[in-house]
Amino acid sequence: MKSLESILVLDLTHMLSGPYGAMLLTDLGARTIKVEPPGKGEGTRQLLASSPRYSRQGMGAYFLTLNRNKESVCIDLKSEAGRNVFYDLVRKADVVIDNFSAGVPARLGIDHGALSAINPRIITCSVTGFGETGPHTDRPAFDQVVQGMGGGMSITGYEGGEPLRAGIPIGDLGGGVFGALGILAALLARERTGVGQHVDVSMLDVQISLLNYMATMYLMSGDIPEPLGNGHFVHVPYNSFKTKTGYIIIACIGDAFFEKLLEVIPREELKQEKYRTQPGRFPDRALINAIVQETLLADTAENWLAKLRAARIPCAPVNNLAQALNDSQILARNMVVDVTLQSGETVAMPGNPVKLSGDDDQSYQAPPLLGEHTDAVLSELLGYAPEQVAILRTQGAVQ
Image 1 (cartoon, rainbow, N blue to C red):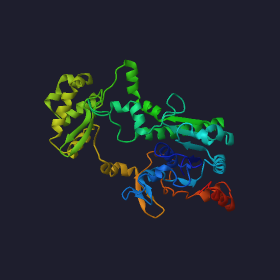
Image 2: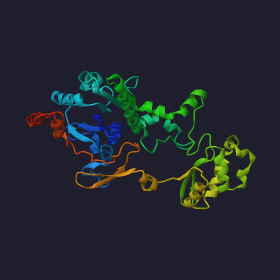
Image 3: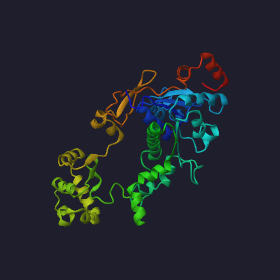
Image 4: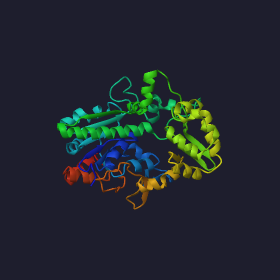
């Protein structure tokens, strides 16, 4: 049994931020019905769909990854008949999540005000670029837009270089994570109050939240931070270093780890008394990093990592994706899972990082074909007769 098995989610999302948030809830057991427009369905279905390397069964890697375990129904929300079908689903549902542009749910008649009149217990969540209040709420936004506006790109990269976005789409993914978090909080509050509420998540707000202590440091001092590459603004050495066979990370947070590092790298230049404490090391960080780097070039990454681990110094290889996804720790934690598609073919993808001791089901169902579950959902969940479904299909309200 999974923790959210009793929760029914209506997923109106597209692209990345919203589908990822819904995926997190689905992985935890929520029954998630993806409501897609008739025709081509949700836009992410088209991404990479024709790629021979990155698609299966006409579904690209984006859609495959984000929509496992979900069901698909096709409903035209722009038609009155279609909206009435959706309203019937809302009567049964716990959560409606979308990432439309701000204002679109109200124009469609599916905002929280409209849906709570139908089901007072409904929880709605909208993940948007800038949120539903403020001067920029009507602007379009995708991942790199909020990464740029949120300040994170200005501190990513090397000193004197161009600003860089994070290698993963942290703007989109962060919006999805905080959307799921807000929904869980609203579900818990509903247990106390008996009524639902609306969750308003701004991807830009999330970027500011993720600045965390760095934002507080600026607000306290007025000092605008600069990019540091892979270094740290306090700890030394804390960086990536090249070896004979690749890069490794050494993270000496605190003086005790530096003392241990001297056992692995016994360079006399590093044994100065002033280097025994962080305030003495930091002004000479460039010199210390250079000495460490020079030393590490003499041996392989594997040998250095073995020595560092034996000394209990925080360290790691800098893996590419092939190395990361085949790491024994990753595989032992079921972070690469096989999902069997309708054709019988299996696709490997990232697993669920949340491990709950009471959840004994780690199975994954195939991402849905477009409208694969329309008939079953309308008949079994809503009790529609076959004739009623046929009429709706003739009207173009469902597919």
